[in-house]
Structures are given as C-alpha cells and as structure tokens.
Image 1 (cartoon, rainbow, N blue to C red):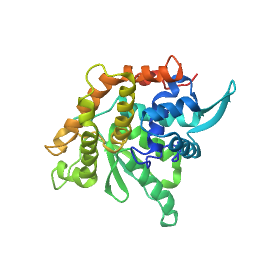
Image 2 (spheres, rainbow, N blue to C red):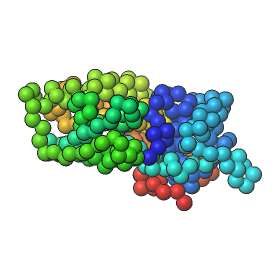
Image 3 (spheres, rainbow, N blue to C red):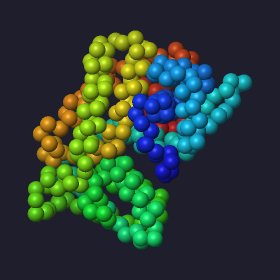
Image 4 (cartoon, helix red, strand yellow):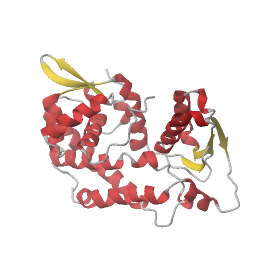
Length: 293
C-alpha cells in the first residue's frame, strides 16, 4: 500500500481533488485510459479551466496516479495499476458504507515504536487516523472490527518495526460511560463539521436537481458533491447512534448523499459517454470497476 497513493490532503473543490474524483470514478470503467482532450472537457463541466486541469494533471502524475500514454496518435493518460487497490478501497467506503451496531466488536491497536524512529510512528498514526481510527492514548488506538483488515494492511506495509498488535474485543468497560470515552477517542466535532459542510455546500443544489436532470448538470453536481463527500467515509468510523450526539449531522448528510446517487448516476454516466464516446463509464456499481481489462 502506498502512502502517496492514499494521499487525502488535496483540498475538496480544488482542481487536483476534482481531478482525482473524476479519475477514480470513471477511468476504470473505460479501460483505464482517457484522451487528454476528453479529460479536459469533463473537468470543464466540473468547473475547472483547461490551464488548471493541466496543472492538476502534473500533480496527480507525480503522485503515482496517472501516466501519459499516446494511443492511435491521441495523447492521453493511463491509470497506473498500482493505484487501483487504493481506488477499490475508496469504492468500498463510498458505495458500500459500514455502520457499527451495538453488537459489533472493537479492534484495539497497540504499538511500540522507538523514539529514534519517530518518522515511522508518525506515519502509523497518520494512516490510522485517515482510515477512521480513534486514539485512546498515544500508543493505543481503536476502531470498529470491520476496519481491522485495513489496519492490518497498514501494519504489514510499515513492517515489524511498529511492534503493532491487534486485539478484537466484545466489550469495552471504563469508569465513565462509553459515549463519553468515544468523544475523547475521536474528534467528533471535526467529523460532524464535515457532514455539516457537505449539507451546506451541496444540499440546496442536490434538492433542486429534480428527478431527471440534464446529463451535464448531473455530472457537474455529482463530481462536486462526491469530491466533498469522499473524505467523510474515511474519517467517520460509522459509530452506533447511541455513541453519537443526539443532533449528529450525519442523520441529514447520509440520506442526502444516498438520494443524490439515485438521482444522478445514470445521467452523469450519459454525459461521460457523450464526451468520450466510450460505452462503459461507471454508473455506480463498484463491481464494475475493480479490475481494468
């Protein structure tokens, strides 16, 4: 697993972030390659000018996402195979979200990284945070059990020097109620702000789409909304309602995103077909795009 490929630092709404969203959503369904002119046109629909798109292309190329490739004399970009696992993980988070129930187990992550290896410790903490783990103490982190596989991938990637051990437990007890403990393990205010920002930025736009928006508008709304949303399923671990504040903003943002998918996916894909002439752009099913031909 590459920390560079899993970079989540691009600011939502920036040209680089929007380009990553377009690439991650559609290129696998088109065989992993797209003409530069078609990509520039799709980005124009998403509100990004050609010069800004070309700058963003240089950045994502340096991140190991795309590489230039000419096909039949047409300049284009090819998705690097090394990037596909990262995009598949994103599919699982975005399109098949998991929510912890009262009966689900917890995963505890204990590690011991020597002081002289502070860089490794920083990488471990940073990557645990980016997949939705909470910090119980500096060397003890926690997450729902369904994130254990992703935690193990991180630990395996960073190697044995992390001294990491995973524990799967049925019950967590403490001197204070679990809901209060959870509020110290995760920054629920920051996660809640992400949900609120999504509703604030896109709620009115989504609600005004109607049931049959024009393909170009459907595509623009889908890409801008997805670009804001795609970070949330990483940082939000999907805790049970009983452990969240009563006014948790995810109660509004999650149904809003679900309704958006039902409204725009087919119409947005129609716009991609019109621009590229390709017959099989992504329409929302992760199974369609896990492997490139």
